[in-house]
Image (cartoon, rainbow, N blue to C red; front, side, top):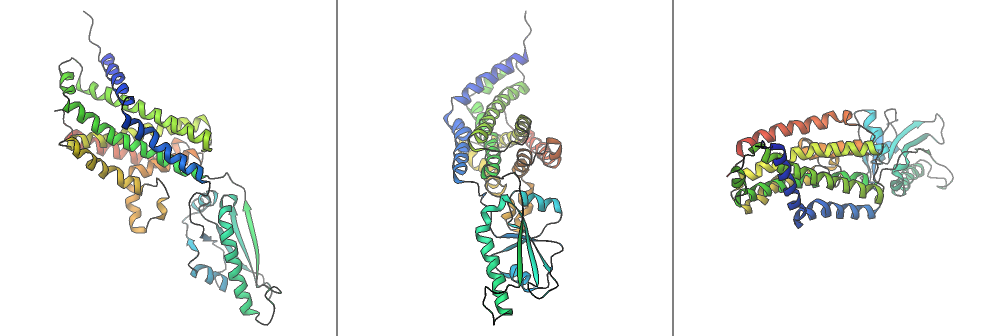
Length: 370
């Protein structure tokens, strides 16, 4: 008599469950079409990145004892950004998140009394049609007050120069696509698993499984494996469409593509744990969406899906930084655009792992078979 194979039984469950997922319109819409619609929308909008045009940093050796500096820091059209280290400043310069770094220095002569230099990159080209006229207006007004008896075009108290560095262009799609992929994984992990196991219980499919020799662990593995395979196909589709249709940056090509899939796999395992918790807590099918939305909506809004978490007020920053989707988005953007590898994302992966341990510890307590 042939021995019963748990592996074959697990693969059979995986195959059947995967077919069921592809036959579900809601699964296809929310996993494939919903993220692609956002990617297509933002891909056609352009490459401005949707970031404020008035952010400027002040150089460490900038002369701060002059009217130009006082005007720049006081005017509400500019937002002065402070950085704890040079690497963070360079990152924002390269991505065009700030217009540039301003440095004001004395010349030692009467006219012009000061030189002011803006260090920037070609990534911030879209900001200069608004920033440069404003800087010129401020410097001209100060010069006019100092030299009130001369024509405005005859003398300037400030000499301007812009130092531009060529960098890799940071496009809208480079920010949007990782956020949409992350949210697709989160939605599938929470909603997909919660509805799947609730339906398996309510339709007595699990009870029928119990009548077979397959173990409960293999039942979960089979169903989970089908969800993982489906979502990895989703991730592949989203990444390929973004790259070939809208120029989504994959710095190291196939290596970056593979590392993004590994990140997707890790995140999906964590997010599925949330789905097991919702499945265990839900008393009926109508209670699943409220429980699931409590987990997904805060992350959708606060985890940097559409815009940087830096735009949130300071009191909200700690909440943003503990969300697992925030760290997935950060890791994906580092790998895709900045050329980082998985070994450089230890902090993000470590926090995801901690979330995984906590989530599955809770899931074991609340998950119900019947």
